[in-house]
Image 1 (cartoon, rainbow, N blue to C red):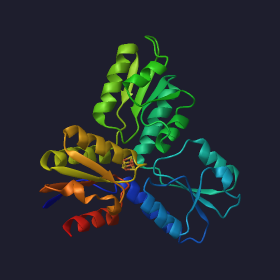
Image 2 (cartoon, rainbow, N blue to C red):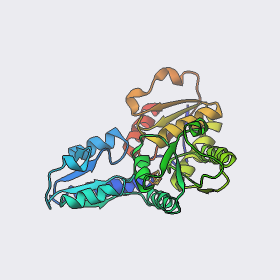
Image 3 (cartoon, helix red, strand yellow):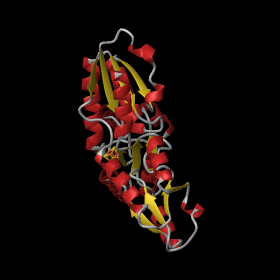
Length: 280
Ligand code: SF4
């Protein structure tokens, strides 16, 4: 059996940065909190919890005081979260990825131009919730072209369209094209991050040359889910697993070429365990 690993897989620069900053903060002696999951990976969150980082759903759950530090996730937050933290006298360490910050600025500038801000993304995802906040009450989320039926867009609606950073380009373009059929004044900004595009292209290249693809990553990770969809679309048998424990030996029967890829929030050690098990 031959094992092939995608050219780009695992931690992206944004997650790597957030991971290092978070662990560094635990050495300061201050109580450190993350709002929700700093990174969408259960193994990484377990490691953070063991290092003493506490999880809070909202700023209001955290005790006031100058000691506490809130880690803003790589996926970003709505602008009001910074104010809430300040009002409670809490410090913030911002690990928002530069690509997400860019998307937030695009959403804000579309809203300032008095446009309906259409975010092509997964409803309820942390990054998307943040982008809605930056859209100043003018944001709507569209997951697929059908979703446009629920939104009031007519010929005179001024629209600005952007993407959650982990969307696929084809999907984004499909929705932009559908919006252009409904409205005359449409501005689009492709805010898909470079790491996502590279991982998606590498995953599709891999899927074309193997008989089975294993996509390693958390079920909550949007970019991992997208990699799985893309490999499936190529027509290669594809399975998404969170850890080596979910690897089913039956999938390997009769297969000579196995491909491995991983989402941007999957740590190296989780990928290594799967490869070692396959080699074993
Ligand atoms: Fe940043 Fe892209 Fe990584 Fe998200 S996937 S953290 S946007 S580099």
